[in-house]
Image 1 (spheres, rainbow, N blue to C red):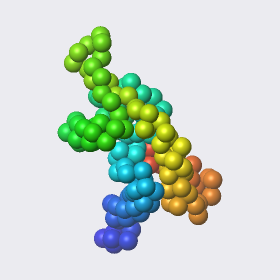
Image 2: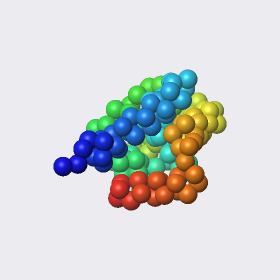
Image 3: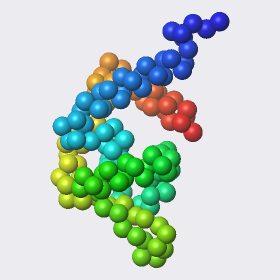
Length: 137
């Protein structure tokens, strides 16, 4: 029988806890949660995407995404608009507040990545990212 120290579920869970903690710590000064930080980073790369598209992009279910978007709109990070061609489709745009936070958000991501991956070689970092992407799909 495989012991817990070699159980992939245990190892991934502990790695997830460490990664979440590092990112959460870096986002606290901005007043963002980890999910909000990832969502905002995604929108800063490509805004005006539909709610459905951003849910698929970030692998978030509709219920979770609806709550996150509602809180981010109330906090002034994003604005929601109805698609002029299809009133059933909501599109998400960043606000000036979000644009001003772009640089600190990028720095938070870089610092969290460095905290988590700092002891890995470039090859190890690339391999880990590739394996995690493969697991996600």
